[in-house]
Image 1 (cartoon, rainbow, N blue to C red):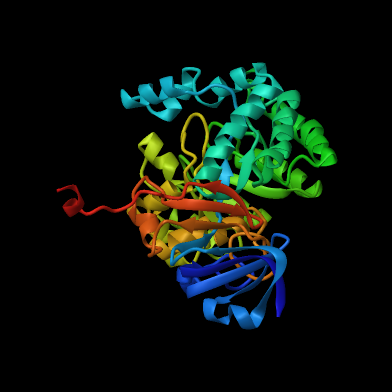
Image 2: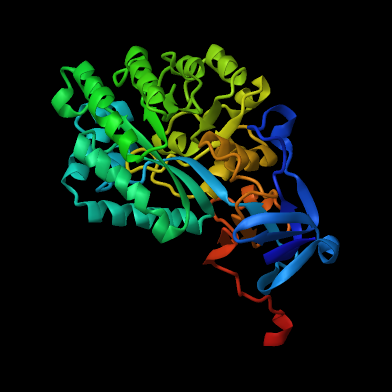
Length: 432
């Protein structure tokens, strides 16, 4: 018998995502750990019991002021994990979006002064308060769409002051939204204009000045680098990531977005937690990722936004890779905060089945940010972050295109969002 201060009962389908303490590959990528007429109990925000509702009386004792919630046969899932976002910036880039709609591509626009450096100029000029309020607004939208945990990157400052301010914004966000925010230093997002003719000097700045300060102040859990033709080479990326490892920071890498330059191989070589984008990954890169513990993070919203071919998730799955999906929310190449929409795209355009898309958006996303022991599944000992869906069949999550049916969001067993549908069905006979 366990003691609980929160009890949820009569979930029509309780998707626990229970399983081994590792990213899910192969047949495990289809396993949802579903309990019919399921129940879940937690104490002080941690799950203490999960099982069928008819077993609650023999297993759970409630505290005097406990919250008990009958979800009336609705679907329950873990909170969604958005494992790749860029929410700290100033200004939007809808003008560039319109340029792409007229036929110009992302790289061409960047050569004309658009792209990341466009956001850098405005972000440097913005106050910390403005940066915080922008990030807060977008994190709140993510929360409303079911994201209870997000990885969030700096990378629109590209100088010491703005990068540190951006990471401080990310440090402070959870106090306002309740979400778990995993901060990542992405100073190697682009070479800033003042270092355009000496990119190695900028790498030196990152490695010798900025990263040691980031580590000393405890402002980031990961370091990321955009390893791509015309941005940072494999050699430059290796230097940055090896220094990050020396400083005790985790490793991530923007890999194979526009070309396969060997970034995925570098991720595997260095034991990076994830390699992200992978739109242009060749067969060898896919095989290397499949044979490693590095999570292959696909960002289908970016492919849609940039009118690029979608990442072939089926190829990664069939080779045996651990696959996660994320929004890549950012002002230039994917202005979308909705993980349910990314689930839609993963099924409709990337070759994942519904079960694989849900695994990729929850437990594998949690492992992609180093939190597989606490997030991404509804198991004893984990945080009680969950979603109540206005649905009686989990497949409707991917089926209802571009509209999520989330009724409630709970973080650590506390209600963070309520959008419970109140519309009643009526009989036409009543109006006659």
